Amino acid sequence: MPAGAWPTDRAVAWATLGCDDRQRRRLAMADDAGEPFLLDLPRLTVLHDGDGLLIDGGGVIGVRAAAEAVADLCASSPLEMARLAWHLGNRHTAIQLLPGGRIRIRDDAVLVAMLEGLGAHIARHLAPFEPEPGAYGHGGGLVHHPHGGGADD
Image (cartoon, rainbow, N blue to C red):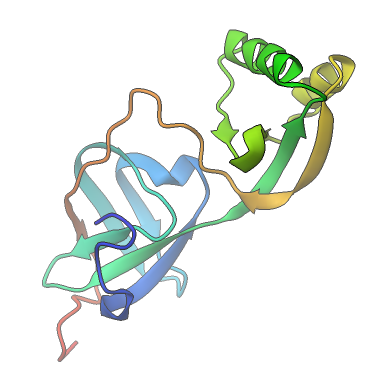
């Protein structure tokens, strides 16, 4: 269930997941309390911060985007930003578009060095990484979780 489309008080658990673990179809995982669950979606899905996973028997596992090592970049002009974006696209690099025209990538020493060489201003830090989804869709499905989610569980 998309963020904002479900009441967070229905969450029986939360799972803080990195970018790679939020782009799955079927995978054994664990929630933040260490309880195992099976992510079992009908198709590859990109989960976003605040999304909810409906579990067998009712209830929801809320999804949180984990903080990861990222590099935010900007340039001195829109033309220079377009140039940086071209170089990232040419390398098939996953990017997140940020307010103000900035771009976020995973903190990769080789890419950061290349971008700095091209004149980028880089801020390295920990933050959630939500790359542009590209061809991935956002589907729904059930999750198998031992909490069940009912009032008596």
